[in-house]
Image (cartoon, helix red, strand yellow):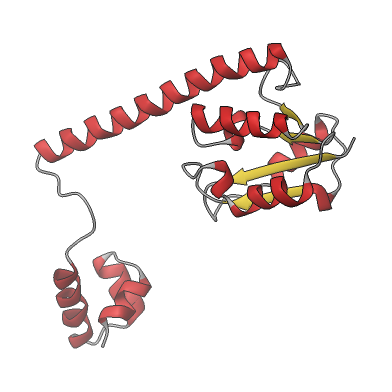
Length: 187
């Protein structure tokens, strides 16, 4: 049986190295050429992720084993995780998620546990969205301006600082915008 690992992080500042190390530490001997790592948002469905799609369509075969560190690597929500697991099971691929008490998600016990954990994960995500919306509503009610500053105001601030002879780096410090923004408004 060939063993593959799928590792995903959401931002370019993160790395999948810790996921690979944890999978190997758990006893899975996964060669580097069978580790698929990608940096893509977890809100994107599994089969819309280039790395995962390539793994499923071109590398995995019946009898192979796919190991993930956490269940949320398999999809964006409960429905996506379950459909991804069903698709992999139909292809004859054994799926292991290290964050669950049972190792084989394709067994009856694993599928039951997956359903329960997926439901709780979806509930937690929904609650997070609700709390975020409530926080934004409170901030708006308190008069906090949300979002980036209007472009014309930034343009005027950059031009005024430039007229005073400040360098682009000093303008970044003074008005609190990125260097790219300063350069865009420097002309």
